[in-house]
Image (cartoon, each protein chain N blue to C red):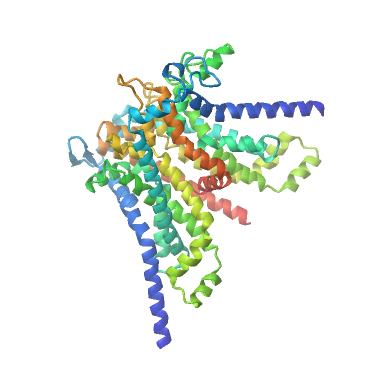
Length: 303
Length: 278
């Protein structure tokens, strides 16, 4: 009886210690993540304006306006997906090929590994500022200057509405390529080498080895990286703000930038919250997809 | 066979050249123009600075409170990192090893922060910080790296690590008379070195490089951090001072670059892990 009491007391003490250990983090989480998340939904049903201090319940009218009356929102949504659809394949193909090359441990591999990671640790702001100048139009920027030396008239990268998005995509691909290369490289190093050797002995050429053996082996990683890169691409902000400011003619206005624009430039905080909710739903869906895939993948790896 | 060798050589040279142009040249261009006059920045690029104007590095501190911005960035990143690692080490250990009712539910709840883009909650956060009187101060910039997505990620990393430690270690320590806190402090923290450094690297980078938060939460120039400061180099006529901007950008990148080049493996491992799990 006494011993039992002792054990329950110890259990209770342990539980209390556990709560004490997690409380600081949980309080911070509740105040800085959970409550704001609930609030963004609440705000989205209000006509909330930061400048006038109005805060009127208006039901779904923000969403109604968003989907039926706001051409810029649809453009923004389209731009966001266009950005993603340009960036993700480019990033994946380049990082995949680079990882395969680095996996061979040829001369220069160490150098390539080191330098492709430089932009990853650099702030997006610094990387965007420098590229903004590299891409200056005419022959003012070095890129167009070099192009002119080989007889190409470079476009107005940032001020032509057909090129601005491409410039931003290039900037972001280069910025984050290093992470994906190293993730792929890790997977490449873990490939069963005997299978690849066997295929080579059977006379398969390098392309066939990549397509028939390496790519299928790396498929789980490719899927994961695709989704993670896609989620990341939904959040491009600093690059847009510093390189194009959403322009020209709204051609690089993306969701996160539109949230910022509506909330902190136009002060329509209620309306901006509705856009934030849309962003939340998109990211949530992608995250659920990622988690289901991860379960499948780890299951596959265990088997 | 010879053709193949030549082909490989060409491919290799091409790759190294391309990588140098896209990943090294931008930084080189930045440093070169940080030592030019404003008029020399555009037009024909040179491999070395034209005028070696070292005064640029003095002027950036005079044209705006750049020293203050540097200090703010260091302060925010250090406090954010320390708080992040400390608080998530405690919670990560508890979620891995201490038994208490509701543990799993609370952990899953915390994980929702992992996927939460700051852009989704930035508007309510703005009003909340205003109500607390924290707007236009460095406090939001310190609190968010500690408790936001980055904090949840660190807790996740610590939990994953502590779960792998054999239980016998704790049982032995308990027999020696150590309590839960003693075990955590004397046994668990010392062996968690690799996780501490990984979470610290990630938290520091996140806090150092963050842009949206200072943009939204600070307004007076004395509270700017480096990312805001970099885009604020204009002369009295509002013309951007490109050369000074490049000098300031160089200074803002330098500490990160040095850490990266010295601890390359540690930094890349941490980033790759976060890329896989985040």
